[in-house]
Length: 470
Image (tube, rainbow, N blue to C red):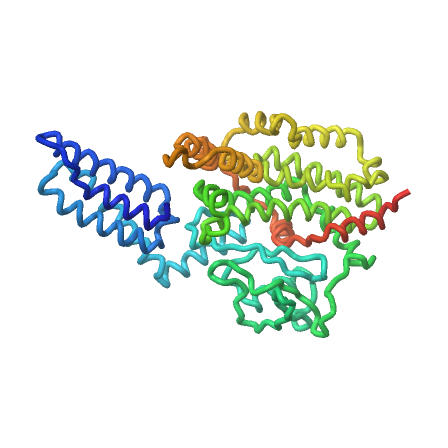
């Protein structure tokens, strides 16, 4: 049912007066009204962020409250339900008024920036967590993944990229390549994302003569400097920074996002923003691991990089971040990296053994039994490997009919509810184990701007250049 259909059905059920005789009629009507009010209270409390801006829900809540006030004379025992509903309406109105308050907006922005400077995430409403990972291409096959607010304008993004690349801002321009292939030169104040978080096109940073800023096949000082920068970082700090990023997004995911993603992915109306952001990040971390290793020109540095990534994966596991843990292990296990036999031969046996143990946790046999057993024993808060959780929900959804003989298959819905409820369980922090930790500003700056090659053919070409096939 659509939300508007559900609201209409609930109002009809609340106002219905079925034909009962005698004193049973009043009791049956009262019970039904209570059931509707209880359901509405639970529904709006649990899914407040999703329903807040829905005009059908606003009208429905006001109408239901008016009906309830009219019923108090005949059913005075509904006074408790009336007070509960009144609280929800007041909360909704207060939130709406604050949402559009200029003071509220500036306060929220300064709070968010101060947290970002310290590398700490915050739990914010969906409207305030409109963050994106901008893919800014610096060559045909590689991009910088820039964490930014969806309200970012061309000048702001270009300035961030110029600082990351250490190139003077005045030498760069920002282009948007649309799907027909048209290139648009963006003006400084042009917005890059629509309200539905759709980008204006594929973003490219290039020099003013439209030449590429960097080439992954060029063996120059940039590649040497890149390896040195990564090798100088503390592995625990890198893991902390990855976990802080993942937790800031994961902690804002509502379990309803998984339902929207599974049942109506193409018509989710922006309700899966946080979920899709974390899935995108998982994929990017995997590509980042591959990019760092394959763009390292010297054998000894490549060995050191692989050792670092094994340690970072182990630290992510220790920090209960199974999402980045999986991404790093999968990145090291891809064919383009795992085929570098000369490099892997020089990795110490002790670290190879550690990596083998980490690999076993990603083993898909017996329906990922090794991972599931480990995850079950891990204390909360913790970040699950989201693609596997979505696979479980999709399996339930596609393997069971939603309707059986024109009746709702509640057994299927209960199974899905039990699975998505895992999100809430993972976000719990009863013991004060808190996910966010202070991270190094240098590492924070690096991880917020990952340089990624997303073309598999380019990655394989780099791999074969490093160690040609015998």
